[in-house]
Image 1 (cartoon, each protein chain N blue to C red):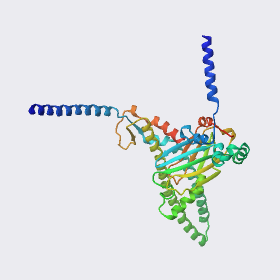
Image 2: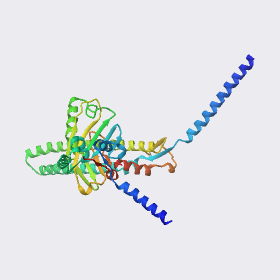
Image 3: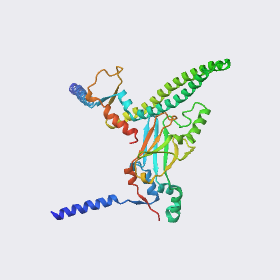
Length: 174
Length: 202
């Protein structure tokens, strides 16, 4: 009787284990089939994002303002260079050094500003893409940047156009 | 057959009339209605660590909030309405997961003072209202200083009211280097403005 009970117990455990294993396999397979993925071409998304277009206009205006200032400084230098007296020559040498320094600093500041503004724009894009993925129940949305992170993807999974419409609507406040 | 058609036409007519009629709410319900995000006049937008809450506050809402007694006195209500009309009002709240908008982003007392000064005055210049193709600056600005432990900071905004554009989409644009997010746009839709109920004045 005791032996029989033990056999039943072992059989029960083995059967139960087998059942759990089968359920686990089925669930994992189903989960695998539910994975929804897509990709975006990052550069296209960034370039055609309304925030980037507006940012570029803003930077262009800033550049034009600086150009006016640089032009007036170089005109001042040019006038000084035509003066023959030693005092003006000395002033020219000092001013041209100052001008070069100012120009270099301005260029460095501009690159830093562009970098910082672009990072700001990416913060918005990242948020909207994440919201899109959440709304449409995507498991993953990959970003193809052309640097080798995605070497091949079926173009049917390219979400760039669809997401561009979404992020521009979100940017517009909708 | 004809009777059926008449029934359908009458039903459609009744439905249309019911939809067209504006409901009238008392002070408390009116405030609740505007505050309710489901009605679209109170919008939330999250970008990165910041959460923006923009509430369009109609003139009736402003009066109901600031002068509750005027909702029981038509004369007083009209007087208050005349005092504040000409502008459209909004409440903007900014919350950050990182902490307080002023202190959590500053490395020194000097920076705290700088940020405090900016959000008290300069921030006004970085806020605009777009109605149709018309963009206008913020003409009334007040930074509500709170001394609680919340991270949320509130700003009261006022823009010129344009009668011809009063029912068009209203987009508030916030373009501040201090938030480092680029331009943030939040829209109050014209469809939601049209659903605004009337305030009951007793």
